[in-house]
Image (cartoon, rainbow, N blue to C red; front, side, top):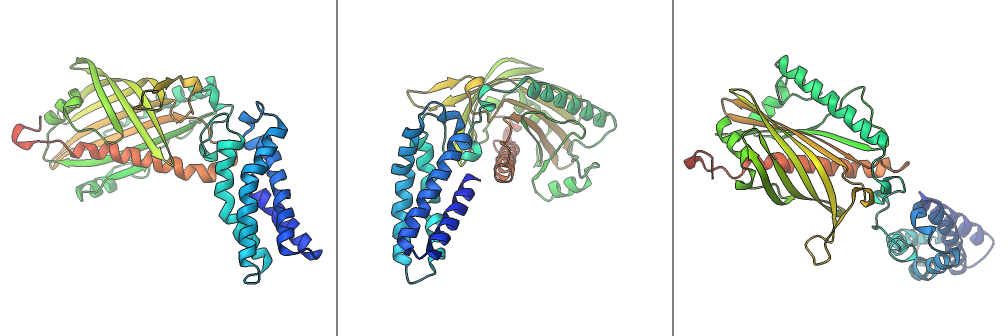
Length: 378
């Protein structure tokens, strides 16, 4: 938004100076200066307000001119000079702005306001999220989990198919897709349960694994360390193994634009609901973000100091036998920091894509690792 303001200022000042009779190059120089000062004011007051308080105005303003400003002057003036006489002057300025926008942002993030953080405004921690989840966010999570558990218990007693979705409550459409070999991934929601001061993602994925039995599925549930894992699981350890469940450690990675790595600890519990169905619930009891993973400087970051991409996590797995094999259904909910006001249109597609790809990866992993000659066990 600040970039749009700066662009408007630059275009308006440039047009006014051109109308006053200044040469295109001089008009561009002065228009860029006006945009640099305007952007710097708002960068300090908004975009990088969590860093600006530790740095003096003159220092950041100087770096803005030398760094981002220098790039604008070199690229902007160079572009206008190269295009002078070939395209209208205002169009040349517009092209110059587009070419240097990414470089300006990178320099502002990595040099002008360099005290902390990553270089993506959409994913930049805000002062609220830097303190970890608020009490209201955690209460919202607890309410949502309780409502979800009640709803699924009720559906089970009413014999609603385990793979049913919000837009296919009897499961007919999903079942037809699964029998064609398709993977069904859908966003889900608990109506009437609002989440405050956080972002909650609720997804479900289903897949038909042909040629396996509930007994094979049960063995795999109890011995996950003996089977292939999704590609976003970097390492796995099982402890306190019992018939009813176990404790599980996972190192997870999530990547899109930036990469985040987490060490997570889960309490896993299994329940045989019938001869044809087994359920498993995994509750994350501890989540820590990892800085510089896999290097000598690797460190764990406290929840309160993390970037807030993953605060809570819980998965509900349902395995239902059908004539062709077993339908694997995973319903997952995660809690993360709230999306900054005004950035929903930009960040929502990113969050949605990460959630959908994570669900797809988790469910598809159940297709691999079976050895039919040995009963599906390793």
